[in-house]
View 1 (spheres, rainbow, N blue to C red):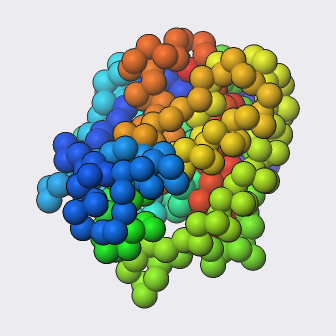
View 2: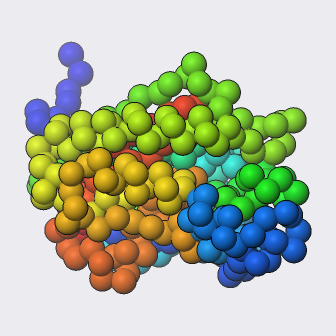
Length: 318
C-alpha cells in the first residue's frame, strides 16, 4: 500500500503579480483603421483603451515579469517553488510548453511545469489544480500564471474583434496553509457550443457575440452561486466579485444576479481590455495594489470562454 498524507492540508494564495505592456491603444486609435466609434465600442463592450504587446513582449516574457512580482510580493525565493503552471491559449508554439521556460528564466530549478489551455477560464482551472496539488502534498508552493498575447491572433481589420482583445499577464502563488483559503471549484463545459468561439482560417479569433452573450448572461450566474454555496459563503459576505473581463455588459449582468449589492465588482476591462486567462489575476493584482481588497477579503472568481468552458471558486485575499 502506498503512503499518503493522513489528512489534506490547507492551501491559500499568498501573493499576486501582474504585467501590462506599455503600449496603450485607445478607441480613437482604432477608429483610424476600422469603421467604428468610441461610443459604439463603449456601449457594446465597455472598453475605453487596452494594452497591446510591443515587439519584445511574448507570452513567456510577460509571464516571467508577472511571476517574478508575485514571488517578490510573497517573500519567496525561486528555490521555494516546486510547481509552475501557465494558463494560456495564445502560446506561439505548442512545443515546448511555456511553463518550463518561464520557470528557468525565473531561476526556479527543476520544478514540475505544465501549461493549461482552458481559454478565458484558464486561470481558474490552473488555480484549482494548484490548490489540489498543495492540499494533496504534491507541492508546497505553486506559481500560477495567466499570460496572453491575443494581439497575435486578432484580425485588426475586423471591428467585431479588434476592439475587444488585449495582452497582459497576471500571477498568484499558492502555498500550504493551516486553513483552506481557495474554495471548491465548480467547473464544466458546453462543448456542443464550441463553435461559437474559434480560430477563423486557423489564424484569427472569431466569436458569435450574441450567442456568447446569451450563454454568459443567462446561465453562468448559477455557476457562481453554486461556488458560493460549496464554499459556505453567503452572497452578503462577499467583498468582491472578479469575473473574467470579457465584456462590461456581461460582467454587470452576472453581478446583478448574485444578490450581493455590497460586493465590489471588477471592471478592469475598461482600461485593460479582454486579456483571456490573464484577466482575473491581472484584475486581482491591480485591486490589491490599489488597496481595494484588504487582507482577508472574500472574493468570488468566475472564468468562462472558448470551449465553451467555465469555472468558479471563492478565494481569500492574503
